[in-house]
Amino acid sequence: MEGEVLLIGATGLLGVDVHAEFRSRGWVVDAPPKHILDLEDPRSIDAYFLSARPAWVVNCAAYTAVDNAESEVDRANAMNAVAPYSLARFCRWVRSRFLHVSTDFVFDGEKGAPYAETDEPNPIGAYARSKRNGEVLSLDENQDMIVARTSWLFGANGKCFPRTILNAALHGKPLRVVADQIGSPSYTKDIAFAIANLIETDAQSGIYHIANSGIASWYELAKECMSRAGLEVELSAITTDDWPTPAVRPKFSALDSAKYSALRFGSLPSWQDAVARYVEEISPTLQVKAVGE
Image (tube, rainbow, N blue to C red):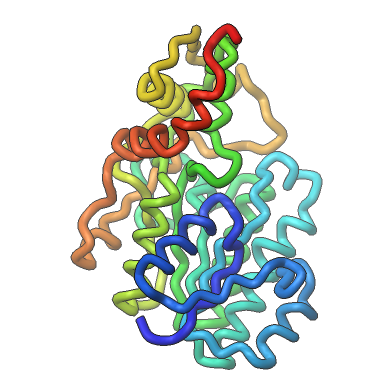
């Protein structure tokens, strides 16, 4: 890959690992802080692109508060739809390629099998609609871009479901976890690797699904996390109806990553393998407290 990469959202859950992966490949990476490039301020984007001419722009920034989005629709759309559209437009003007990270939540979960890129999205919540709006607006504006959809992200550099579960288990708390929502748990290090592969090979424009192999429920993911960490607490499987939330979530949103795999990359490791590496990565913090302390 020749030229500079502009990475937006470099301090987030996914962005930290994307930044590290890019740097490990010897790429020149510009990762401006929010006070320099603020996606919630269109004037900031305008000003930045007066002089910026990166080879690629990678957008890992997003509004991700799924439940809060139901009451913060405008803010969710500003970050997840308007900002990606603005980036896509500027990338077209300055002839930079654009990669935008999206989500499995653009699907309604009614298919009952992993979703391919050719399946029709049907978002069912405000967050999901904002992310789908970002896809549509960006792709309509810029034909030379990639939308990389991923799923159920977890990693060491921010809040995520496995961290929440393990923290609760460390304190010996009984856990009740939803067992009737199915997805593709995905490790940020593996997703960063896949994103870098798409860029390094100058992949064809369009939509790509990138997720760790296999499917799981939240309950199965929680059980695997505790097993890998050597923690034992009471864990009960419950239904979505037992744990009502402001936002409706798809019951089955697993992703089929065959299109990515066919590019000669092969499949990403299984989600179980990813959980094992994640727990090993965060193990120093898990050793700080023992159950009962």
